[in-house]
Image (cartoon, rainbow, N blue to C red; front, side):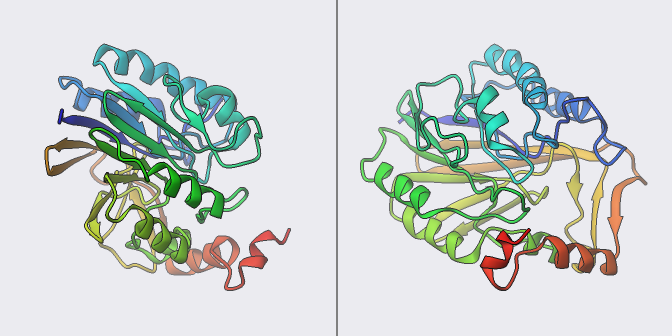
Length: 301
């Protein structure tokens, strides 16, 4: 089996007009710094596991693609993108296709722009499956039955070297109350793990939490990349939410029966936070944007 080295990035949050994230962060500069941090390495894959865009515009996706494509090509890497809660399916598809624009992917959704952006591609014996955990119009995540069946049917036949699954909302818990309220549906997370357990899936790559986390679930490593645009404060009061002005990513290496995850986080301004929401503000956000007790409420205008 040949090894696989992945640069795992997430949450680039580009805007089509080049605006600063939260009025503070130059997202293109953060991405440049993240790439420079590991620029001396060669990679097989460069993965952006969702929230590629902040505003869901075609221009934002073009800006990310234009910055990443020459860098990845110079290092022999394929680019892979997944949908996040800030992304918009129609614009994502128009620029990035099924998430694996440089491969002959088999897409779940065909030409229906409103259905999930999910795809599978195999390159040099390694299979990459992109899932779409976004729920249009909300921040929390879910996986429709058709995606679960797509995953289940794809994994029936093992790939030569193994499979990597990319999905924005992780099938593991968050560190803070706000991010837990915006997490993947609990049942969908259990179903995802049940489907991949015992298959050739070597790792699940996720984002959304802006915090480096690696957790083994039913023998499958789930790894969350720190945010490119900012890095969440994971050890403060869980009722509050804050992020540092910094960037991060992870280098994931699969070699034989080993999976190694080496995250990196760099803080740009020692005393500056991108944002800080106290417990009252977080409670308001959860009330307005968190997952409702009755899932039917999420469809209400």
